[in-house]
Image (cartoon, rainbow, N blue to C red; front, top):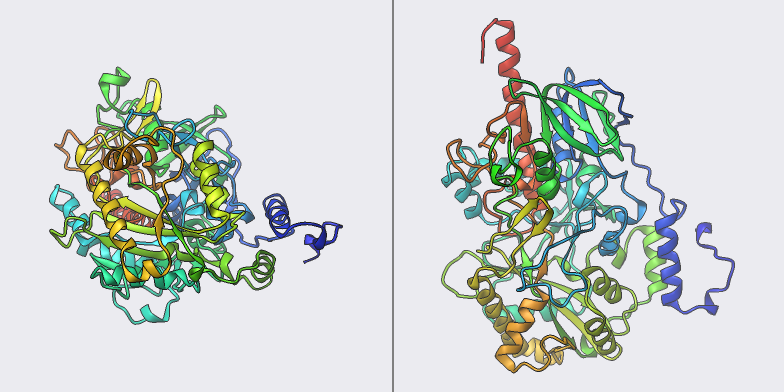
Length: 598
């Protein structure tokens, strides 16, 4: 721990000040938290170089796909990532919000629609991972698969092989659970690359959350179920984040997989037969491909690359190689955060310096997990089906929290008035942040290209605002439970200039429209569907319609958003895509031997 010696006595500084100094050192020096992971051999682009497969984007899907394709030793794979290797700071589970607004984040901002994001400076921020591992290097590490009906719906739209029973084996294939409770569970895997683990926070507030939900009739389940509360698995291994890059790329010694970092792909190149021939980089170099180009750049960047490649909506781009609805059908999980004040009955003994020492010496303690964030409730606010419409999550900020709460408020982008009022209350009250998230929004957004803009269109459908209102009523019911009353629970109505003068119902309508924000799950901008569907960009094999030798493998292919966090589904998509690509390659190779055509 000699790296932590700042040359001054710890007694001369407050613990919060020391904490921030240490975290600053963490982000600027590998001395504090050394990363020993060995990633695939580094590749520096040379004009005209050729590979069997070129994968654009080393995020949740791209890293997974690259590793699986590398299992065929005769094929060469190039994985291109605009960002760099993940920083040591991104490894610490308890600091997952800290990566936002850094060089490891694309730092996108949305365009407003007058119905959302009013409480935030400069509109809603849309963090997207810009590093090897992509957004799996900055997410909350919750392992959630979503509802069975989600995937059955995909299949019902005409996407052969994408029903729940079809995709379950790929969830299992990807997973290496270390949770003893799941070791013999046939719905979980122990031989995959993605490590999942299970823990229960030691916070006193854990029981308050769970008992209040039980009082309202909700089951506390052992594993993810259609309805009820549970503690989700997390993608954490030995106290550190297990991103897709860590899981699939690090320390694997691939001989045929090459990784180019800090390189942006401008567009895909095509020949006269509309076959993808390679990619053009922003450094004016061209790389060639023998088999396929695969875009795994995510629901924002994949559409950008397609539009630059003259693939997309003709009415916006003009002459195109393929007139498909790229950028349409944008869906996201919006949330409306509600702060609840709690008394000291939920307070824990917490020493920042002790937690730092515990983590850096043993990789344990509160920094080694995501605290109460893995307590998840799937609820139906209408009580009319077993299909949830709200996912409830939580964050806890103890009294005098000078680290977590300011960080969250800053990264989400609260305006000064709201931020200062919330921090003032936290000086004398513990705060529990309820995060009701809309699982199946009816609002649809889009990405535009001329000019570029992200338009999530939150609350553009009136039913979405009504579900959020029902979620607020649900939280009010929780406040009346014995467990919450014992904790002195009271909803915090903090200073929000746009809404302060509104009466009760008007206030909450105003509140919802001002604080609705992204849970970082954009999908659907290159939707999968039947070949004859005007609403789809790729077919069920994830091949881009109208051109050849080009596929998309990331969250953008989801025709409808899943009912839960999207990281595990993205990895599942890549696992299945790898098999689809290998099957096609085998058919082509066999056909060449037999001198036939395909």
